[in-house]
Amino acid sequence: MVLRSIEVTVEKDGTVRLPTSVKLSARRRAILTILDEPMTVAETVLLSEAALAEDWDRPEEEEAWAYLQSGK
Image (cartoon, rainbow, N blue to C red; front, top):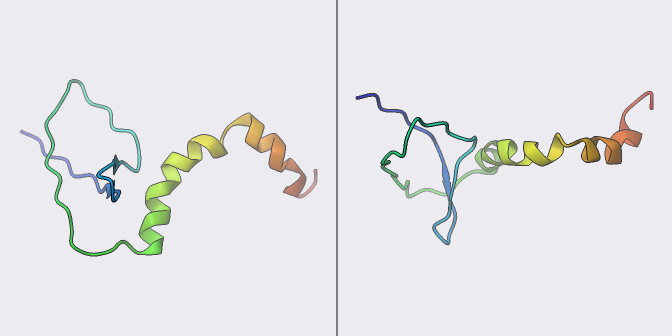
């Protein structure tokens, strides 16, 4: 048996957010341990980055913000 740990965020409503997508060969069981300590701002930013990157990397976003890039 191989165990793999992934740090996730659990929202107040119980929604579990993974920092990146997880590829599995089949459906698997998981154990979630909830830590009784608040997240820091830095942790929140890091866990959100992967989800936001999907939107950031779209061609429409590049075009919308192109005027801020030097040399354009």
